[in-house]
Length: 208
Image 1 (cartoon, helix red, strand yellow):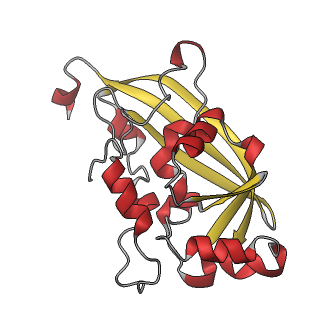
Image 2 (cartoon, one colour):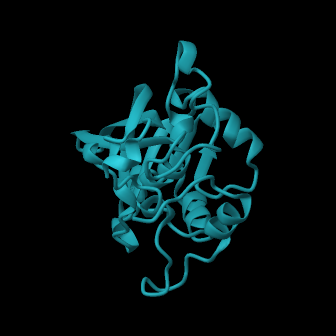
C-alpha cells in the first residue's frame, strides 16, 4: 500500500488546475481515491490509538446529470466550475465519469469551523464551489482534507487542527481516518468522518 502524508501545495495545485476535458483513459487517479484509507483494524495492532472521534454531517446529493432542473439556479456556474478541474471522485474516490458523477450540496453554516477557515484562506482551491449560503463539492473532496472535518475536543482539540500529520496509512504519530456514508432519502445522505491519532507501541513493529 502506498503511504501518503502531508498534502504539499504543489500537489494540490497540480490536482486542481488540470483540465477536466481529458478523456477518462488519460485522467490521473482521482485525489479522493489516493487519500481513501485502505487500512484495516489488523493494521492498527502495532499502534496505540488516541483521540478517536467521529463527526457526522447531512447533505443533499445529486448526479451531474440531475443538475437541471433540480439545481437550475446554480447550473451554469457549476458547469463552468467543474469543467475547469479534475473531478476528485465520489465515495472512496470512485469516478463514474460523465453525468453519473456525484455532487454534494450543504449549507455553508453546516461546515465545521476548520473547513470554513480553510476555504477562506485557500482562494485558489478548485474542489469546493461556494454560492452565497451553500457549498457544492464531490464526496472525494473530503478525503484529502479529512482532519478538518473532525471536531476534536478537550486534550484532542489540537490533534486534528491541520494536515501536517495526516496520512492514508498508519505510521508513528500519524493522524488517520475513514469516511462512511448512508443514503437517507432519494437525494439525501448522511456521512461520518472518523479520525484518530496513532502512536507506535514499544516494540510494536517487531510483532509484524
